[in-house]
Length: 368
Image (cartoon, rainbow, N blue to C red; front, side, top):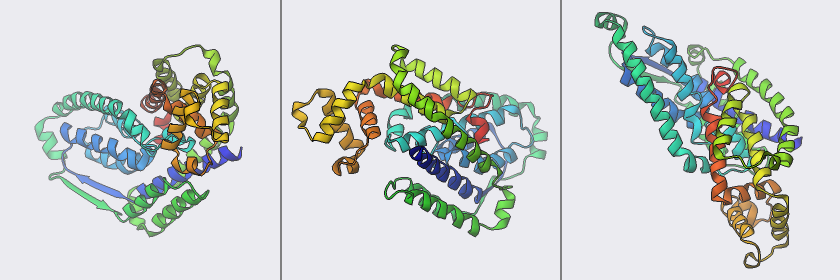
């Protein structure tokens, strides 16, 4: 309970601080929203989502996006914004999407996601932008040129207010990498959020229509999720081997389907626990743990234990050197040390992030 509680505090500290800081930056956009300009805006939004998180990027960019397209706003403008900025775009870093940050809290290295998921990100974002361009060009050409000239604001003007909050954003991003002592990371994030809120001019918050209601709802929702997912995670890890021999494709579609009707954060953790139970036999975990605790020589141990020790030294160098590795670190190292198992973690990560924006109760609605 204490461990899960600590994860919840870390999770909300990141989500909440990014939400507050992004709410202190206001973007004014003027000019005609051509299809190419819209594509570039969405591409930038997809990249920004990896820095501000999908919630923060949505908060920052949704109003400029709606203003840009005000004279020809249709459903596809909103839908593709949710696809690209509120979900798919945040697949490259743990900051980008809530399930990836939970994986980071569990011990998956920060840059592991970008290293293994960037081809899927490029393909997914590229296909969505190409499809959007086709739809948006058809919509753009429907409006007569005279109407476009009359309603579109002349001249491309981008004006930014509250850029001082970039300093607080940098502080938050730097704090992500702090793991010791406990609660230091969360304290720095909270302090940066408070300072940002206090120092941001009221006019900027009013322009963004900023309030705390969305983040309050997220906090209430996720405290229920974190509390109720514990028995499910334990059961999956114990009984996962009864699932047979699933493929990465099954993990991708199953994680995506559940993410679209529940939420991708608990779905991600559930399937990560299932992968640990499925691929890490208890006897192998016990053997690796005995070698680790006994300090056995790597040359006299099985190959999988040698790979696990090498992964521990690579992914958790400080804990490994100080002999402070936990059972969770050991399990993740065993999972990440096997290239064949990496495909399952990649499938889970991409499925949970990419398929969340289905038109139900998934993370697209939460981010929105």
